[in-house]
Image 1 (cartoon, helix red, strand yellow):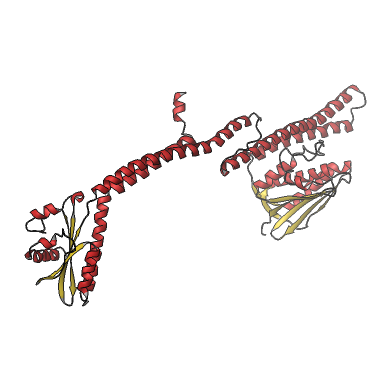
Image 2 (tube, rainbow, N blue to C red):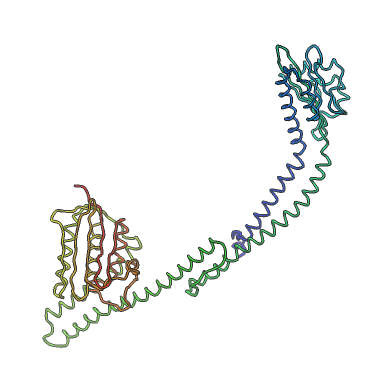
Length: 485
């Protein structure tokens, strides 16, 4: 029992709680990473992008006559120091900050830095601390160690520019403000935010898990009673999907109750249909045995007819289960539908003519070839005619018509019975459905014909339907594609 419990998947409530908490911890981890660990590198990267853009702007404006005022204004605005030199010495110099590193260097170091920038492809970047700058000799050499990013206080960037045939070296020194206090403040804020974030996530997770799982738990309890036919209403309040699931289960329960009722009626009807021929067989057999002179061909024929009827009923019941379960495969072949329809009508007329039934059939003279299971389609025509014979009413007149419409052939079977109400037209094809509550014995067969018809035609992907008017009769029809000659 313990191993089974361990193998069970998590419930919705646990999954929602774990998902919300995992999301909260992931988001907090990302915030801690970007706001504390990566804050200083981001700050230096953004500052370096500003300096690079500033140097590009100076390179474009070097030839303007009013360049120096623009240089002074830009340096002060960006809190940076600028030196623009050539191989002949310093051309422009702006000291915008009191802690500018490059203005503390001797003049000869500008030429050294100028050459160092050229050796590095026209650009050079150095990030060092102010204390380390005092110990570097010579300053800004290739071997200058790059300081740790958290201790960096100044960035020096240089690039070469060519204007009017001259080569300039633009050197910019920007001071980085210490952000240790900012990081400390952010860490404390993030600690408080993390606690609040986790608490809010836990409360939301509990609320959502309860609101989602509660209606599902209710549906689960009611569903367990469905097998015992004790629950029929699954209406619950909740999300739209849960409400739709409840409506579906309510419909399923209603269909199960209807199926139970129809099954009971079917058993009663089949029992009645079986009892009638058995009673007649037993009765006529006793008469022929006990009463002299009653052993006549007429009585023997009655026994044979009822035995055939009994065999047909049993076959129909078996066919319903076999065809609808899919155990009887379709074996398609090319055959003449006109010929088979005419033969079935003649055979049916021979069986029912003595009881006063008339079957009028209209079929074309030329063959109508189709590709289908010949035995199954014959069973469809047979069952439709039998259904018409059973419900045709006092006129006892049935019409069978075969017509061609374009590339399809239609078989129609019409009766002059009481008709079918519009609200029941879709239900008459069901396996256990019966329009009237009073059982009527089929003239031939068991009365399960329409269920077999629906299944066979669905297996053939054929079109079928019924048109009916109350008091005027019904017309059942189906269509099959015609094979080209």
